[in-house]
Image (cartoon, rainbow, N blue to C red):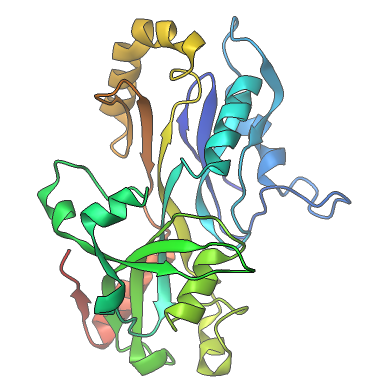
Length: 299
């Protein structure tokens, strides 16, 4: 399978995991080499000579469900693995998912929050100098899962109408920003609280006509991430950053439109990564336009 490398330096990498591939195989085996972890040594460039504590094999620091596609963070060194794992455990890695849900999902006034309130919850809601981003309103789901706090910030982006077998002949594209990371959190929050399960999600779609929309798997992609650099923000990495930052920023920002490495006003070095949605998302637009038209929601 193809595993594109989205961002890479001597300390960590970000890859684009395809749908249908597991990140780690079970302890007893069963997937052979058809796992992301097995593929990584073939696509990741080893750190250059002089980098210390290099891992024997590059290692993912978090998981993505088999049916979900998108951005996966991989450590190349032991210190990077420790620091990146800490960020994910403490929910400091800010991830954005895009999904298609079955139905015309409602955005109730009593669960609406402002862009500023969403930002205070710790999710990435866009650039601070982006006027359109600042005007957006968001929805917040704060419902426990297995007696644990579970918070998802989301908004509707687009509707697709005239879709046969969909609820009310309508599908909705939503942007999802998990504050917590519970088991199947996004899928369950959309199905149980939003009453609009992910398109093609046979576990939570409730059956019925939805079964006829399962052919392409479920529609969930981790398409954006903002993360602090695991080495350049560490005490031992600051002096190195001062030496290489101009070259690193130019190399990254000049050649990859959706990848940026920046130094914030507080001195933190952040990596921003974004990928295009899988082609099956775009095919829904074509299907809807052919049937009844597509209405974009105001930002």
